[in-house]
Image (cartoon, rainbow, N blue to C red; front, side):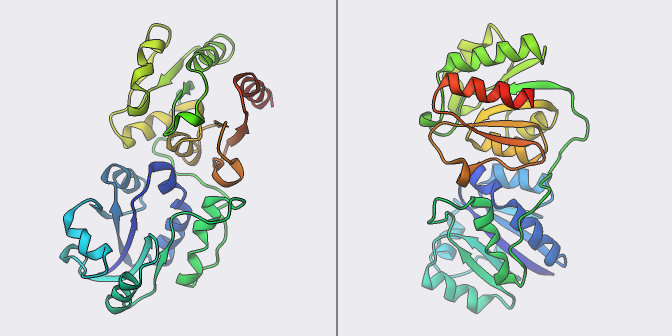
Length: 282
């Protein structure tokens, strides 16, 4: 069987930005088995979404010679095409040229320009596979079909510079609980463990054990509010109404995309609350 190999070794939000390109490639290479190399917890989620058939841990020693352009590991036997989100290395490109009978491409993981959305940037890899770089108009990757109507507030991200004062999220959750969503919950991940005690006495706490459980939780929500994070990007692409706050990053480049997703730029808590209220009123 033909095998299409792709690799992405970055964070969750960065990986999600590649999904429209992967969906298009799966359609183009429907006769191929898709094998991913990356972080297992993210690739397990991708498998649930139907984006990958098999996957391997990019941190495995078996792949060190591969990324160095020295040899293809046995688990990739049958590789016919490849898309590697990586900095271009001549030895790795030469190895792909030698081993792939079909098209291949090495795509740098981040754009150099700051005025281009990362998702559109990743779509630019498609012409290397004889496909147009057309943006996906209807991003939708649901795990569940029925929403339960609760609201989720995520107070963290991968960088503290992106976050507001923790009390802001408590105030926001209380406003949602009082006015719109009686069942309002706080989502806590590994980066927000120290905040759990602050919220636990006032709101139900959700601590998904893995990305698949997180996606199921997000799919059931009627509203998600968070910062520029992988969680916000995931909420957006699975179709949940998403309000993502951008304090220190550029929404033109990193804005959430989905059926009902808005990127709200706000430099402080008061501005963030005004943006949220306006978005909910609309």
